[in-house]
Length: 226
Length: 384
Image (cartoon, rainbow over all chains, first blue to last red; front, side, top):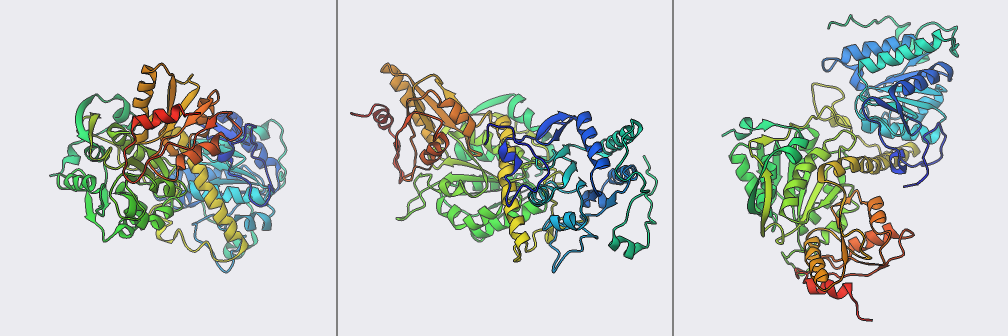
């Protein structure tokens, strides 16, 4: 363990960067966040996330199985909050990580991101900022390590549990309320005058594969019943 | 009988630290099974081997009494440890146990548990592993466990065996950990000898495993992604698969780092230090700690001040704690119950560049020999 503060910043870090947890980076507690390896308040963390999402190239949300299927109470509400977040980020795309199985002989990087070779999706779509939400922690962690090793993508995690040391900005124990708080942080920055990188782009952008499949996004979330 | 339904669920913190305790004079095997009684275990799978058999026989009694939901004897250790892998993947709380040659037979499976992120508790009652055949206590097998990826706690006595076993479930199932926890004690010295053990009421038990709040999905055909398809052949040959495997291994090490917080919380620190200001320090784990405590007392009677560092957790290893505790030391001895001296090797690697102390290459006993306190005293004061 190094005595120096280890910073988790966008890569490419090289062939095999160390796990941040093995370099002294510790997970935040509830009510805190982690920004580039340093514990910050939840509010500070949300602001950093919002700023990165509005200003970096090709912002993309990667929803995982925990929000893609309504497998238990509360998931539908959280998934809806993710879509609300997406609508506030001009130029955003949504590429799912539906499961963790290897996809051979090759993945379609415009259709999915896969933990076996996540950097293919990042590089193909030139994604420089992304949000992981609803991905099981083990697969999020190995994905984050590989992205940091081989790409310059700024990784954000809205973790349902303890958070992720290897993402550049991480919020632990994030439910729909935390996702909405991030949405509000995005709105606040725009109100304060931050011009989004893709300010002239309307709505959620489809990848080529998604356009081919759907000829446009027609699905809307069902109303949430509380 | 369904006694588990009559038990009250309490938090791990309450069960371990707050609940009133009563003392009992019991063997280590009894202490382990009493921990299992309070652990809300769903399934235990056993294969007999001395000195582990008595504990798992008693766990079988717990099944008969309705404290655990399922129990069976596997066909051998490979079968037992493979079955436990399957049980853990389905999201239930599970435990098994073994000793010496049995552990070695199942080692391939044991080493696969961490990579599959399987929460479970594995009790190890150490025994000679090398020929000629012997059932005597000797903890050489822990050398193999050190690189297996399992969290590894080493109990000194019957009380530790009780407490560490209960703590093991709580540590193992934390989302950011999601790893198997092995709890080892030295066979016979702990398992078949009696000692005072303070235990909370048997009317209390841990909360059930929350398998939906762990680092990997478990097998659940109702909820995607079904885990049976999770660990497909990532090693199919291309560069990225190698990278994924490397990142996967890093993640296991990272999970060990994250476990430090919970190991510290639930077993009261990775080390215990007695006489921290002494210039001569004994570093020991397991039963060697008890012998060292007595040697330390005898040394004090002779006017010599000696310190003792009890290493409770071998994985994660108490790197920072050990360096701090040995910073002032001038001489360190490391009593062990094995011929290799794996703790000696760990301590040397940890203190290299961080201590000026002379680190003695012993003392060690093995093959079932006990460790006389006179031997420790001789090593404390070597003849010039």
